[in-house]
Amino acid sequence: MSALSLTQRSPMLSSLFGELESSKPSNGRSARASSHGDAADQGFAATAILETVVSDLNESGHLIDRHQHDLVVSGSPAQAIREHFAATRSDLETASRLITLIDPSGVWAAEVVRALSDAGGRPLDRLHLREQATLRTLATIERTTLVRRHEETLKIYRADVRVQGRENAEIPVVLMERSHMTVVIVGAMQSHAVDALLDDLREACALPTWRCPNLLFLVPPGASTMTHRIKAVAWPLSVTVHVSDEAMTSPSSVWNAMLRVWNQVKKLPHARAGVRTPAPISFGLAEAASRQSTAPIEPARAQLALAHMLHLDGLLGCAVVDSNTGLVLARETREDHPVDMALSASTSTSVLQAHQHAARGMGLADPIEEVITSTPTRQHVLRTLPGHADVFLLTVLDRQRANLSTVRFKLQEVERNLS
Image (cartoon, rainbow, N blue to C red; front, side):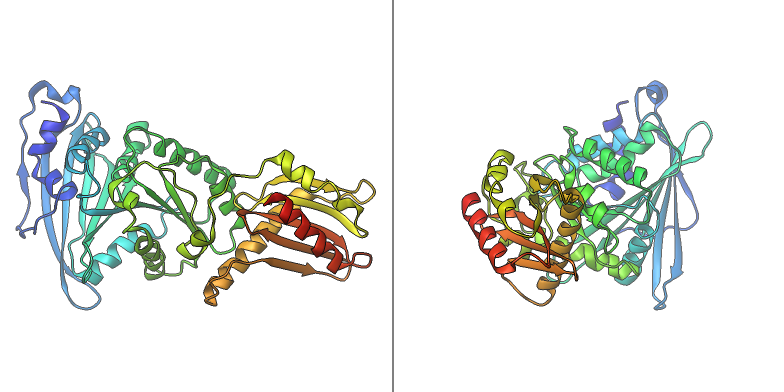
């Protein structure tokens, strides 16, 4: 028996992964045996499905039915789920709205799913995938549904992989592939772990089976280095990457951050149908609207535009900087006063993003034009380019010698040359 045919016959997979119908409470435990003969070695096989319904009370005193399913498997459960989704969610335009949570640190995803289940009074479905030979739990998949007034019903999934291995590691991937949005909750992680996570996600997004159009990273506030790493990844053009750095202090704060992005993208064509079109990194609709689709600035052209800047008295260094990555496209520095323009560019990128975030919070619709940071001895002048929202000009000045008005006038000349 093939993996797909068994998946179609399984009432557990039909309810947990298909279009969920209202579940009827059952008493005790019931075993449903699947006769599979020699098919166990050919892929996915279920020797028994054990279903229990546990009734308990939430904090508000409401009775909640929590459905738990034990599925004893052999072969590849990830491949069976992938084939089932390929059949039931082939068109994201018509498929039910689905969000998958990925939480490497294991801090918030489980709490968010449980809180949504309790708040909405909807069942929390758990699927325990157990190895046939040892009955150990390979992974647990949790799902709840969220019914919103005047909105389409949302399904929220998370997977907790218990046993290492390539086959088991693919279980979260197959959930992400057919979601409308994947939310990656990046908690306190070491640098190498963040790099490994981004590499795995980039490879997953490049798979031919990938259909999820939106990838949202929830990062801690002020994590500018982590944000730069996310933006520097060569994501496939079919995926729109969103980054949110709001404080995560409770399940409700995490959910609200997710919901804000979902409300922005849910009506976009590619967010619903999985249309594979070029998609930029997004940091909110207000900022995205201010970005203009222009050809990128070539480094040689940027270098030429900066050629006459060093003639200014008191100028220690200047650069053209990519505001998405913090990388320097072109630079000029004085040999007698060396300045680390790469470090200045990276730090100034974070400063610009902080000002943009604050401007949005104050309801300012216009883009940031200029940011000046001053100390008793130094001055940093940052100016954005009107025709290139992803690029800014940066100058480092000796405050005692430089004439700020002259510097700003010269920067406007560079802007015109790069327009």
